[in-house]
Image 1 (cartoon, one colour):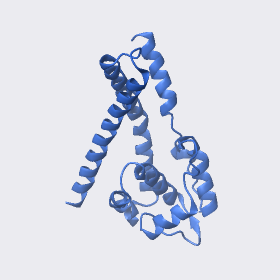
Image 2 (tube, rainbow, N blue to C red):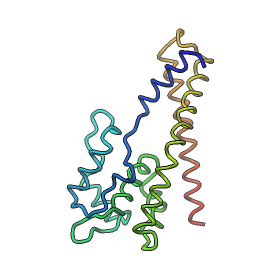
Image 3 (spheres, helix red, strand yellow):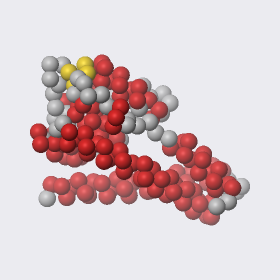
Image 4 (tube, rainbow, N blue to C red):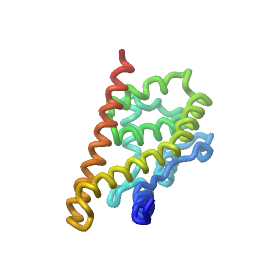
Length: 188
């Protein structure tokens, strides 16, 4: 690998850096709504784009509960299951419609999936995210290489970045369509 490519990967790694919630950091105690929103906002704040205000608000939680994406709290307290479900909702709502999130989350709301089973599912998801991150990083780097071959950086930096963004958008759109089709198959 040439030095410029290694530097680009370091640059992209910093831009793509996300906050996440390690399974062990999820409290195994009930939280009031304000504690829950504070926990999510504190642990995922780096994911916010400049100017965005909150990861999670009371209104969002109330809407998720009203729309049956989240079970109601017990005596105004939210447990570990609520938190895990909110983490899944947070990531998926940025990719697919709330209707699709609801379809996807429905089995997770069953009593059979609560407690330790849901926590184990989150542990497995979290465990697979790290290797997937490197796949994504390599995919982004390859898109940059393709862009560089078609339009060298020294020709026009703006057009280079524009084409790179379009390639990334195409990649995201393709994966989003695949996710939607897989969700549609869940109903069949």
